[in-house]
Image (tube, rainbow, N blue to C red; front, top):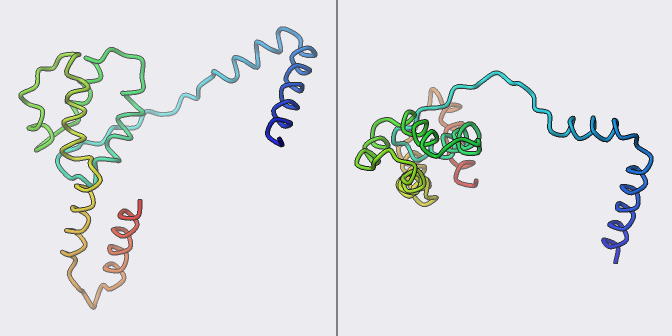
Length: 152
């Protein structure tokens, strides 16, 4: 019942505010909501074959390219341009066509982005840490970093 009461109060407040606002104020409010900030452009990371880097790479590419209103062929060209090594080899036999954008994304995600693949890579890194009495702080930080990623 509480949620319905809150919704009703919010609805009444919105109606009241709309009646009291002059038309030009409504338009400026709408424009303010749709304004974007011009931030400096960040370079996209290159992805080669490290599954531990896949999430970072895809998050950056997703925000900078995938969510933009551009044709799939452009998205695919950006994606292909930022792949190197095994990742580039994984898509080399697919044509760079708009139809293949989602196919290639799926191929890359299955090869590098599956959580079990990422976890396996992190476990391998954890087991390969060498005990170092002189730099124990570095060792502890590396273990902590890996464990936090495994929790994510």
